[in-house]
Image 1 (cartoon, rainbow, N blue to C red):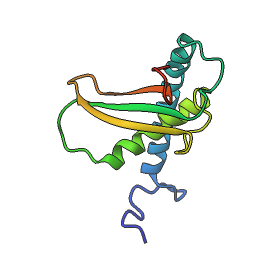
Image 2: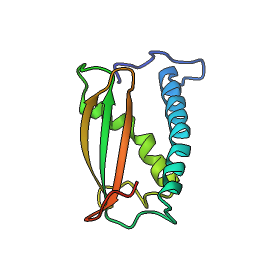
Image 3: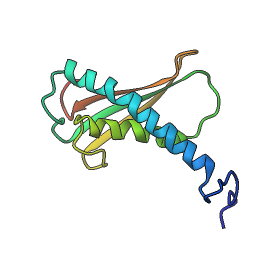
Length: 125
């Protein structure tokens, strides 16, 4: 049994923290989508980038606090889904998209930057 069993349960048996996480994930995805569509339009992409696609994902954090890689990646999932939904990527699977990662600190400016290019070519988006 999960150590979190019963924690934050609602009357219908749903976990309240799970509901809040799904809501936050959907809000993040809705926030990312128009930004990605705007970048796609400025780059004049007519469809998904031809595979394979290489990328650089930069996590910009507000301080040098300790952060685990697995938390970065789980926070990135809705943004990656938005890249597929906006028809920038065909799919975000490992065989079609190969990212590199970087980490920087910028107080009061926490965000994630994703830079994409077709393997062997200059930056596209």
